[in-house]
Amino acid sequence: MSKERIVVKIGSSSLTNQKGEIDYAKLNDHVEAIAALRKENHEVILVSSGAVAAGFKSLGYPARPVTLKGKQAAASVGQGLLIQTYMEKFQAYNITAAQILLTRSDFSNRKRYQNAFATISELLDRGILPIINENDTVSVDELTFGDNDMLSSLVSGFIHADRLIILTDINGLYDGNPRTNPKAKKFYFLEEITEDLFQHADENGSKVGTGGMRSKLLAAQTALYLGVSVFIGTGFGRNKLLDVLEGKGDGTYIVNRSQTSINTKRQWIALHSESTGHLYIDQGAVEAILYHGKSLLSPGIFKVRGAFQKGDVVEVMGVNGLIGKGQVSCSSEELSAHIEERKEKGPEFQEPAIEVIHRDNWVQLKR
Image 1 (cartoon, one colour):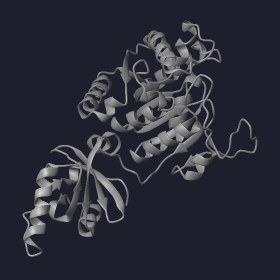
Image 2 (cartoon, helix red, strand yellow; image 1 turned 90 degrees about the horizontal axis):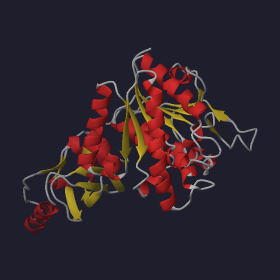
Image 3 (cartoon, helix red, strand yellow; image 1 turned 180 degrees about the horizontal axis):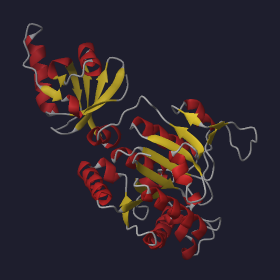
């Protein structure tokens, strides 16, 4: 078996009991399975939920809190309990673990995005097990991520993982809810996430988590776009993760064989950057950048909207709508001046072309 870089995502329902407390039998089972992966020389990154679920009982809540302040307070208690337990359990296998707490802004801010990538890469190079969670204590947007499903997908993409394994309490994807519909059909292998799957997805998560099957489908769809294969399912015992790698996992395998990995910079442009303007381009420019791998030059741009500076990210609009995003090499003021000069001097004017978006700073979003 060849060495892989694997992201393992564990949801709250797979880590806690119905009372919201850490289930040590479940946690030990996960730790042992991850240790088995590491013993086979695989690189592992653990994305673990459970902070809110582990902490709310200590605050006196009879069930998972529904208010933002309640969730954040529970996370502040539970995160410490969770990471302490993980570190102690992994130490028994001579594995040193490190905690990383991320928020959405850690992805949207280019510098912090690069720092997170560098930190995780350094930990992996030194044989450390990164344990990642959302920083629910201070985050607002992150509580809508869906039980860390999307976070695990984004992490798997930007560290160029070979595989994302999402462990849940249902053994894969079905065309209905297997808990209420005994005739629901299980999908053992998929090559894409279709709209039909979303229509069948259960919107509700467990009593101690926030994510349902819809959030897992969104995560899988994103991971596929980033060139990462996905497994969604369950399992028990030391070999459950090794079984997934060998094609014997109890769940659904999702693999897009034609999708290739996207480099880290383009991932940031496509998924995390905030657009500060729009460029409207003619059909010739559309064909040049979509089908011939060319950079976007100023003569192909006929309209600019928004105010942006060199290094900002803008959306590029073709004749039929949005086609992609890119990082510009000039300001909106400079580009607008070129367009105005072209209009004033007429069609005979030989405009000195400037490179507005280099092809290395371009991401196609829609054909």
